[in-house]
Image (cartoon, rainbow, N blue to C red; front, side, top):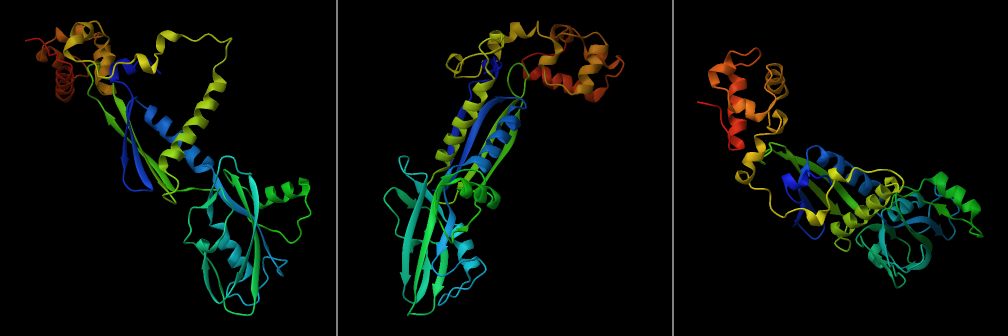
Length: 332
């Protein structure tokens, strides 16, 4: 971590579990701008690479093509495919990555995902998803579907190319493109705070995640993505490259509390004018008038500042407030 954390406080996560499927993670005390950098990376990784189980192939006995009708079933083959496409699964860590499941349906009525009988180690996450309706009591609908653990998006072209390389004799398989998505949404926003003794601003990152089922928690999703981002970031830490460690600090070495303003007042006096929160226009005006340090600014009276080029009443008011925030004031 950057050593600025020693000044703005130790990063902390506050977790607000809104519901079984919705959690807001509030990350406090990040360097200015880091909230957007961090938040955007997390959001994109969750949307693109949250890992789950989905259906990528379907076989319906007597149906060789997705545009066929199914005898005794209200929905067409395409409708059934689209309904199965919505299903999401949780596969045990030791389970096979690809699993074919055979199911026989008979009897008039509507069927949803809760009707499926799954092997041990495979759990349906959205069991209330509608599948189809059988209208003819004399027919038996035989469906075989492929449950696959994956991430990101598998296109039809990708699946076709992969089928050609697999050593299988699957005939009549209807391929289903899928994205394995386990989240309904993920969004983030940033709250910016300027209240520490240096005048440096800090970000508060709020990440809002909602999953499709209470069987998979937002914390599990975020933990997986955190591990992914961490492993990829380590690729850029080269053993032979020199790193200026004076700019870094370990998480364990950062104090839990934000540094007390009054305890560091003497150090502020020798800090450049950049350490207090001023608008770019006001800061540039002070620098052009050769006021480069907080110590220089403390020696000036309000009337003196008003005579300087580019420094007006609004700028002086801004300077007074900024100095007060760090326990300082103008002369006189």
